Image (cartoon, rainbow, N blue to C red; front, side, top):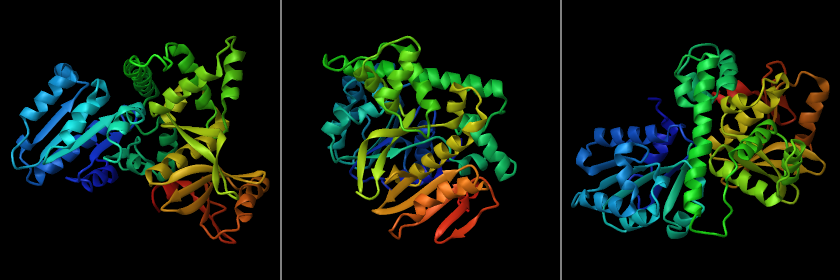
Length: 406
């Protein structure tokens, strides 16, 4: 198993705290593995196996426990007196009304609860309402480039080329990287995400007749393909509608919005809203959407040599999320800054480009940063190694080195 050290340390920090630990992320990114590694840590730290209850709801033998009454009875019968009981509920969204079970366990003494889910809808609905202020979310992504590099041999630049091509799903990083095997695995992941997440989402919406249902998987996949090809560019309901119309279909704006929301809730895409740097507020229009994994993106799209800059931008965006930043795209007058990263009320501005060796590209990328009047750090990340240095306080850094933490 790939040890996800940073996530593991994050979850350890919340041990026995009176909050529910919720690990979210796309299927197959390593959530189950993380819980197993944490379970092993607890046992190694002296916790008795009898104090640990671990249920994976994707396993057939646990299907009966998808009834929340039976699940509650099963768990309460196994609580250990006068000691902590560590409860791990993996892929909890499969259990209807699971929030009632979690809420009831939460108020009991000496319970430490950890749950995982592959759809953000569970946090935007009943769980958030019922457990407001009583849970923390650990958002998990596929492997970072640094994690990927630790599993494979080769020079950093060679490994980065491979990382861009096949992505960071943990199983892929450890397998023979032949294109056929990678494509087969990614196709399986993609279809599982689309079908299972939508199926589970529909079940949770059936009780509310006012919520629109997603019934057209072909439309959903077409929208996903359009968004994958639009990484790095602002998208709107109109631009998606125009694309769908060009293929001979007409779809309402409400339908498109609901389908895009479903793809975001399934952690296939992550939104970056536009931030007005001068006005210091976000703008609710023409956001950018970045894909959770470049390997998955490459699987959906035909090979495009000009995509290098967009792939790099996608990778940098995800890495900023891993490092704990809230990430927006920046607007300064008529110019743009690729990323405005915010952590603890401190900003860091980033431009991302494949190369700065062309004079016009250099001027285009550095000018918006020069126009910023505050003293927050300003960085350009590039794949070339010829233009590195400090330009009037603006650092130009090699992106591969930055991703490795160098």
